Amino acid sequence: MEAVKVFILPAVLAAVVPYLLGSVSFSILFTRLFAHHTDIRTLGSGNAGATNVLRSVGKLPALLTTLLDFGKGALSVAFGEWVFRWSCEQTGAPLYTVQYGAYIAGLACILGHIFPLYFGFRGGKGVLTCAAMMALIDWRVFLCCFGIFLLVFLCSRIVSLASIVGSSFYPLVTFLFTWLVDYPAGNASPLGVGVSTAVTFLVAVIIVGKHHENIARIRAGTEKKITIKKKNGAS
Image (cartoon, rainbow, N blue to C red):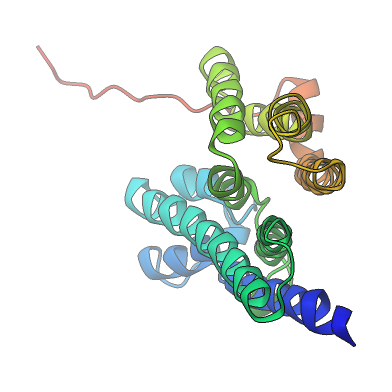
């Protein structure tokens, strides 16, 4: 009974609320608003994500989608941490479990984004919500993975390739920081290192798996690049 109070109930709450929040697909909502009720999943690549909104609808809805998709991921992680911190205060459970709440909430939000309850379980690929999860849980991991993403994008101009490579490094960078830096400093336990590495590995597998069509196009050389169009007429 004590285990239910300490972990199971907080875990359920930290998963359900972020999943419902993650299910709010801003790419679908803003495309309907800016493109006369059009479904973004019928345009361009068919993905309910910010990159497809940028190509198919425009810069403003893409910017709003980016900010709010990142925001819902950040809010979800903060909520998961709050739930577990409150549980620790009420039950006397160790404070290191707060990070478990963050990981549960982040993963749930990503799953909500990919499989949104409100939109027939057909959503995006979870890259922005994953980035928010990285940023709130460990800024060092976020900076490393974002740096890798940026480097690959600048070299290739392909967002999907940069997302695949950046997310693939997520579990490795997480493990290196938690095991080589945090654990020797007494800021992480072996269990914590294992949990964080396992969850981030699962997140990476999900995101890379959702990019299977992009991977096929990249291999075929047909994946679209992001280009900056120059205005004509300047003299």
